[in-house]
Amino acid sequence: MGIRTLVGMLVVALAVIGLLATQTSYSLFLPGLLEGALLTIEIALLGSVLAVIMGVLAALARLYGPAPLRWVATVYVEIFRGTSALVQLFWLFFVLPQFGILMDAFTVAVLALGLNVGAYGSEVVRGAILAVAPGQWEASIALNMSRAQMLRRIILPQAFIAMIPPWGNLFIELLKSTALVSLITLTDLAFKAQQMNQSTLKTVPIFTLVLLIYLAMSLVITIGMRFLEQRASAGLSRGRAA
Amino acid sequence: MWDWSFTLEILPTLASAAIITVEATLIGFVIAALLGLVLALVRIAIPWTAWPISVLVELIRSTPLLIQIFFLYFVFPKFGIVLDAFTAGVIAIGLHYAAYCSEVYRAGFDNIPRGQWEASIALNLPQWATFRDIIIPQVIPPIVPALGNYLVALFKETPLLSAIAVLELMQTAKIIGSDTFRYTEPMTLVGLFFLVMSLVSAAIIRVLERLLNRRTSR
Image 1 (cartoon, rainbow over the protein chains, first blue to last red):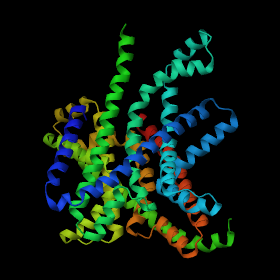
Image 2: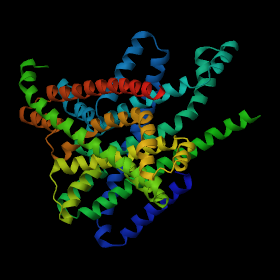
Image 3: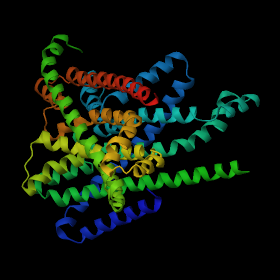
């Protein structure tokens, strides 16, 4: 979908939320839901930061680390990609305390989502690094660069552009996964929705608003990542054309 | 820390719950694969539907599955359609992944050379025969890996059904946990089950991919 269609959808989504907010049967729920949405955003942001860090670290460890580090990274990626996010969330929330590791629900949520998406992200980072043309490596070797220099100045800036679209998809996955944290007692958007639904039974207005709010947040991510992609690749295409 | 006799005690319960999980996965995926195909076909056959369908797909893909499960489970009864939790949940999962699958099919259809369509028209084949005998047999093999990945992804989403109290693996593990105050064994077993199943299905998909590609390249 083009960026214009996406912006159009975002405008429509926000307009519908605004329109619904003028009716009392909807506006009643909006403040509570927005409060929940704030927590959702907080978890999604922190989780994304952790996911990017874990993704880059795991990818670099698997590509260039010494053997033990490589195994650790591989086991991490396989475990977190091979089991479901909810299982990981529950495992961290219910099982770790039995080993004496106590964390509050918020930390567990950020940790579980960040580690989960980070595992998928490491494959993205690894793929993007491997996709950089081999000539770039050879040229950096010919210029007598150190491995760190090559990565930092030659390879990663090029791999970065290829990573943007798949990371955008992962950030949306992460945003959607934040709904799971409602199941470990956090009062995020999904939790508020369920709570209000149970107390008022006004299912249609509540869940319509919730879906629209999630949609708006996803669209913001998609549009943001498209802009980032455009800006990042603009310099590159100019450089190549010369 | 880890009690083996307790593990053996809960194993049969978890195993029977695992069957529900696998059932939900398979039924959900059949819905997703078929509905996804229908969406992709309608999009090609009736051009004006392309835009509304792509907006619908975007809507479904941009909102959390958990909310969609709640939505179907709580909203259907308002219209007089009372579904049990399992049915509502499986339909929600199927719908969610149908959106993803329809994009996979679309990519598959886009990869068919124009000449195949034109040749079918030249041979005076009816549209239905063109799809059934010419296009779809060429579309399916290359997209099997992508569909397989969504099957595994769908499988890993089934624990969400525990949120509407379907007695699948996760819910059973939670009940065992809250009954006995021992979460370590049930949760870890559930995790292991998913890990093993995911790795096995990834291997099966790889084999299938090789088989299909061998047939088409011949």
